[in-house]
Length: 159
Image (cartoon, rainbow, N blue to C red; front, side, top):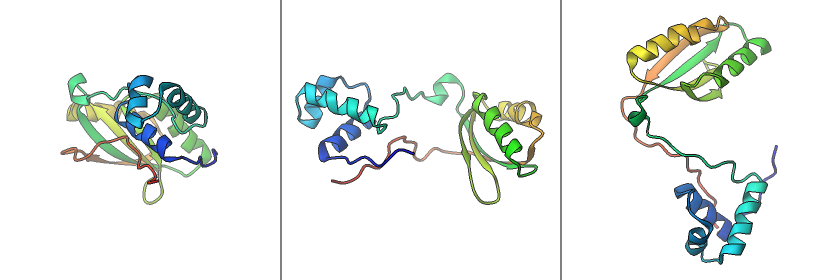
C-alpha cells in the first residue's frame, strides 16, 4: 500500500488542472499554476513517480460508439469460496463490456458497471457471458435511465 503523499498548494493546482485536461502541455500547465515550465515538469514527474498520478486516459462518449446502454449488475456467488471469487475476478478482467467491477459488502458480492448497445444486447451478454460462469448464484440488474453526474475527478484537499 502506498503511503500518503504530502501535497502543497501548487501540487493541488497541478492535479486540478490535469483532472480537467490531461492533454495540457507543460508550458500551458505552467501558466495555469503560475510556475515556469521546468519546475512544473519536475513536479508532474514526481507526482507520477509517487503514484499520485496513476495514468492518463481518453474518456470516450459511449453513445457515439454505439454502447450507450448502461446497466449496473449486482452479482452474488453461488458459494463463498476463494476459488469462486478468483474465477469471477479473472473472468471480469477479460470481458470488454464490463467497465468497472467492485467487490462489495452487503447482500451481493460484486457490483459491475456494464455497457452494451441496447437491452437486447444486454440480455445476450447476461445469457452468453455471465451465464457461462457457473460460480454465480444470482444476478440483479438496474438500468440507467439518465446520467446525472459522471466524473472521474477526485476531490482534492483544500490547502
